Image 1 (tube, one colour):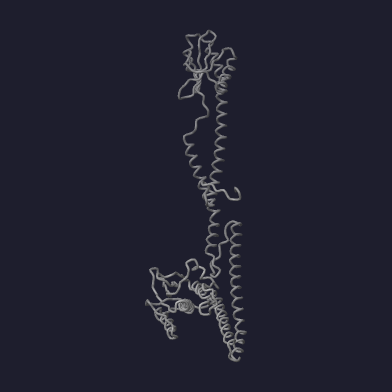
Image 2 (image 1 turned 90 degrees about the horizontal axis):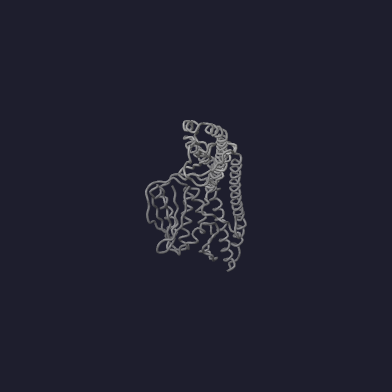
Length: 440
């Protein structure tokens, strides 16, 4: 339901599909059960009334005729014998009452008049009190007053065990509703969980296609969609790798021709442009490979030696890369992928801050966190997540020292996923950036 193009939401209407289906089923079953009970109640009431009125018409006629023919001094002996469960006879004027104008009272009066053949005029009164009572007053042939005290019974008495049966029925309805909703919603929950966990870069277990045909069809469609997405991503990476690879040959030819050309400002600019193109191509190949780097096997490395070797390689070239803290022990990982992640972090730190620091710590869950820190300009908080995307450059200039290709962090993110780890960027207190990779 909409109003002015906007959906209308009721505060009492539940938000989850499970609750909505449960509410609809319970309400429908309760209404249906209530209608059945109402029909049964009305049918019993009509049957009981027909029995009662039929009894009045048949028995009362006989009883009044008997009392009318008996001598006045003998009538008291027969009053109790002629009385029944819902009416009794009283010799006398009865209790004071008020005129009865109810439909039920009129029906009873009509039946009694029919029973006595309209020989005795009848006056019907309602007796006030906690129990509904009617009294029919008439005079016999000799003028003696006779009162018929009627206690109308709407329906036949209800068995004591019937409320317990009703409670059991409602419990069965609730149980069946819960089971039906669970059967209907569980496949949707599994589908939602599979969609949340969807990662085309990882080959996970296929969604089960068991159950009803509709559920099986949805599961098969989801599995096929996941395979198509993975295939499209693989094709994209393969195209990027092929283009980057094929570009290396003409770049090499252009560099050779530039090298044999005469020295001039144009030659220097051409070589500079070729260098930027070559870096872009190499980063493109690295990014394509990082998405499918499962070919490297995991091996055990000595953490301290591994980090020190990376730091020493930079120091040998005159770069300021220091180690703040090391931990002793080994770790099982893919060394080439981890080295590429850390070198990308260090290259970014050197590019923007001129120096880098490496800190290693082991956390309570047994994970190893390796962090590269710098005192550069950092990253605006609203752009930290975007910085992990391919070809995103915080430095939009074309300066070859700071511009970059925008693939370094994306490659690190891809490689961390192949290690079963994660990458996180955050700004340091006092300025600078921290790039962290966590491995198990």
